[in-house]
Image (cartoon, rainbow, N blue to C red; front, side, top):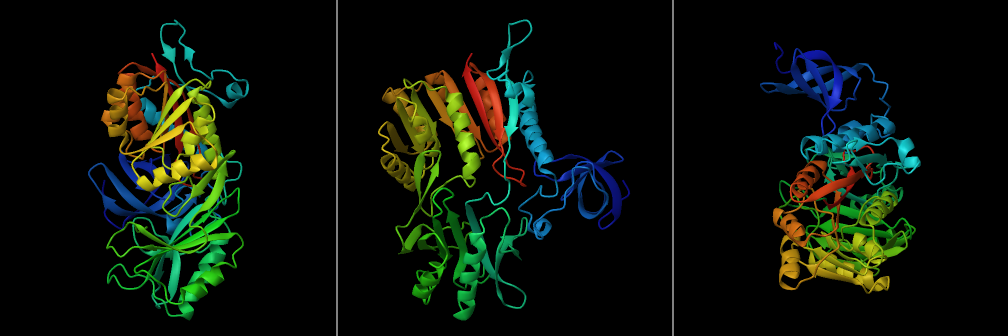
Length: 480
């Protein structure tokens, strides 16, 4: 390989990495090139080279792939938040399915996993897995991904940083990939249309009263971020300004102007004086409204505060939770553990068909929200514990004898703690439903359970995040 930094070369994109970069090969050497699509013929510039692979910048698409589309967002490439916006939605779904399937085969060692085509699903075939031809081994099935009917404007939450441009003017938008350089963009096409109007109100207010955005280098300035949330079912809006202080000058005027946005229900401040990349502070100061908004997933009502975790795509979340509920196979007689339960979103779904649900979550405020959400919905068969799943589950099972017929886990990207998985094996529930946002750690944990008496029955992906590389997956496992 005779290439060096800043040289250009031409290559065909043959595959894509998990983070959405195109992969091309030249004389056996592997190149990773962002903003490309499988099938593209591209001209690229060398940026960094390792022994067997390198990174290059897309300069020009000389022959576009049939899967390539023109991104609707003018900032798509600079922003970096939508890694797949140049790829048709049909191909995005294939990419996500393949990523999960390949991780389950490679890391999870589920060699017998059979992909089911849409026609079989429509006919109700192969829904519960199947026996192999010699009827001695169980063969799990990988069902078609659940796609989005309308992939635009799906996000009910957005967090916008504030800063200044080279002329010192206040700007807001999104950070360019792997930087803290703000790309001015007040109307992300994945977010709700109200974001644009709210951002204009705040930016105009800051200009009018000379309120400066926070500077990460000097740690001076006041306004760091704004969090905007919308209840899709209720139309309620929340604005929470993250500030380097405890008050905004003339904030009564800002509150008055923000109320002009239809549906404005809650306005608050989040105090964050720390030198940190963490967006939200721990102290919330309420300026207007009850301090929360409400929304529905299915017929379950949820109260959402500024610090609450709540899925950003409510339409697909209902499909995801209904899949998890279906896989749990509840008849009304089961005791269910919901680990990493957040504000009880899955727990309360399960409680509608379970005898008893125990939820576990490490964040105390989330557990408060979960208990309150249970009260709001008149659900009395759900109980919530504050703590780590790997500590609460062994404590309650081994010392207090609380068994579970079904365990549902929805862990963060790092997956389940091994002690938690060990306790699941000891408890021996009939079914384990694993909801995952990271297919690599999912595959690792599935392998752990398969080596200790469980088998995968079926797998299904649900696309929650159009134009990004992320995807949710639900796996049903049962005792072998």
